[in-house]
Image 1 (cartoon, one colour):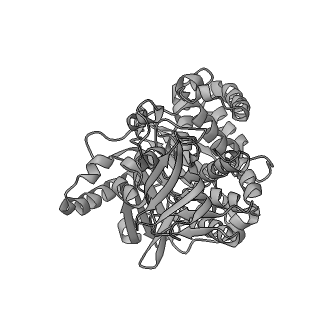
Image 2 (cartoon, helix red, strand yellow):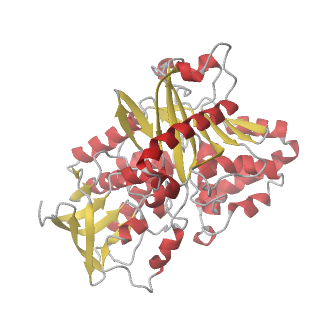
Image 3 (cartoon, helix red, strand yellow):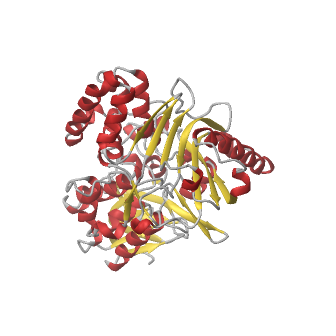
Length: 481
């Protein structure tokens, strides 16, 4: 491999990198994907403890609209030459948004959400119908000028009840906003459409199935994947990348390089660094602070037998929106997401062998990262219990003589420090930079970025990002010279 030249080198084997690799390999490009860690998937992966496999990242796949030919998910299937049936997606049953004392139910049928709004916010139902129409129109022609605009004032022009506005904002925030207590208008449009107008789904096997399909597809097309093989340096001259130096000292070169590891993470590898006049130098100021702590509980009962029938619950336990990194403590439990993977409409009424409860809340990377080793486990145990108590507040009360702890067969928890360790993301920032780079360009002619910092988020967005960058920067663009 030493000194070998490729048409394209992709840094990172996350979903965007894998999708870019498949798209390029379909057109006979000589492609290699380099991954520093020992598992693929990046921010959406899995791990095993005592024989149990735990998903990381995947609560649900958005954009589930099999009847809409031009939906983002169906576009991905066409571009990657994957049949939709391979993903074996099952729709959500029903989800819930709770803001203070008010809740809204929704599923993959928009009329159901409309009926909820008509019942609880009768004066807003016409306004909600208007915003749905506007979202559809805006999605067809997203304006770069609106990337920096806050969604709050624009949404408030139509949804005049602040409580309903907050209810509708909470899921898009948790499923893709890198901004504290805010979301850009473009990101809101994308996520609102993907969650409410299209819908949520999940494969029975979770993220493992999706990763296996992508990995096998890439391999079948002749793509090369090297694990535990990170990039140490991107050496450039004459405005182009000339050589990649790997962790083991190996050097490689390529006509094009696509990085999926984050914009600043990529720029930090560049020698020489970007010129001070380049706008990317200001990127340090936009490192995201949004990171998560997640608890996972495996229970012996099916959640539905306990009256826990919702697929996903978004909660905000305050009259004010609480989507921000906690300043003075490790965790902010005032808002979060509860996901119950059992509660999808799996084919042939399949049931997960055990109950799974995942609760995600906001965490402070710096505080977790600077804990002394002897305190880290203690704090994890402390916050695990507090997070579980918070989740129980928003789940129906357990039947008499039932106790969550006694029902628990296994449990685990990850923190922002865990996210950073296994993904390399600065600050453990799941949604990357607060400033997105939709073009995917950098200061070097043949170095592009895809994934979170390009602005497409979530599982569907990540794959679409990889495809878009592969198309725009390699397949329909002349080689840089």
